[in-house]
Length: 222
Image 1 (cartoon, rainbow, N blue to C red):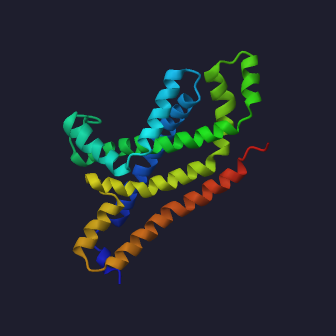
Image 2: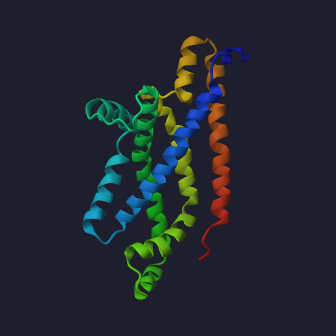
Image 3: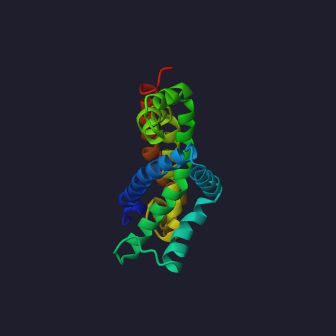
């Protein structure tokens, strides 16, 4: 029944999906945290930049962003993302950049919602003992905010895993790219779709269960 899988590196394609997800998740968490800090900053310029970035980027289709990183940044502006001349390596790096730019806006809003759950009195107490804004955010507010938004961040991570299929638009050989190739070459459309659907379930379901358990385990008791 599954003879059509012979000659195709299905595991390799899903491994590419995992690498895209992992690197994009780390980058999105870092950039999203910076954006969240900007959005609650007392500096109007930083607050305005963070607000504008989030509202603009999250309303642009992901496909447009991914294609822009390839055609716009690479072809027009000559952004190389490292010294490699390999087209596949460049495509992978540009895809990660696009995913980070897009997903960080959702991470930012999740973290900002967590920041809003921290009682205002704790920030005021921190300032009263001499802590500045960055120290208050880093030592008092963000540790509690992260614990309260593990669930929403899990949803963002799951969405990111599924969004990696868009990378096929710029030739990154992840799962959706291989699925398209197999559908074009084989006559088992339903079985091919079922195999790849199952693959994404295997990737996302354990992630959701684990992070859901962590969310309950680490929830801030108020």
